Image (cartoon, rainbow, N blue to C red; front, side):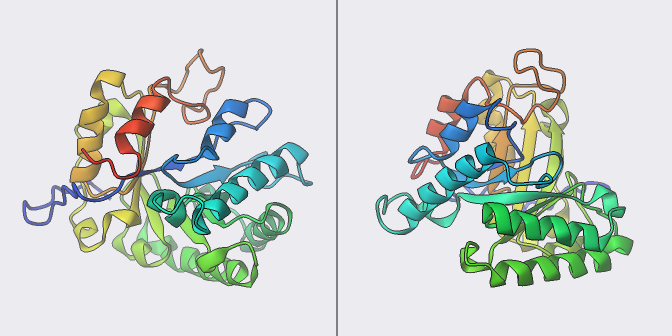
Length: 277
């Protein structure tokens, strides 16, 4: 679906909205200990982070992932129960989401539900990130069936307070009906060279910023302010910006989102609780 330019009255600069981080999935805690530690640091404006072991929950509980999940869950509990009463971003977010790969609609429903149950049973996750989610109208009924079942599983879980959170990882603007199938949609995932000239779909103006997330790699430090202006202008409430690229030798990872950006402390201070551009 092509991106459309919204009319002037439909665009939302959303200067008063509080941005926060969505982390698409750091490397394994043994490979990225600093990254996982930062997620649990008090004051980090985290909406959610994705746990991904072997493109899903793995074949058995991983002790290192169990420890990382526990630290993040405890940090969220501290925020929710008053140890950081002014930390509104952490109090409303900080969830750990299990990674479910939809393979653009090719994975069987029963296989996805089995992975979801493992995530809930082993890691007590607070929601799911549905990676490679289809974006076309024809696949919407199947996705709605899946998200309805996932919501029911989360509602039965004692770890998913508030019924859990579902994020659809389209990476582009999907058919508008997907907005009613989950809590949040990733409507951009890609390089800064594309993002800085991107346009928002008109229908997104009918929803508040907390319904949309943008993931952008290759953002130079000197363009952070511009990137945040783009996110606010396009009505995204959750972001992850990094200066790393697809083939970044500094991190040893082909996934640019698997490690911290070099300017992590700066971007945390820019979008921290109570700070707006």
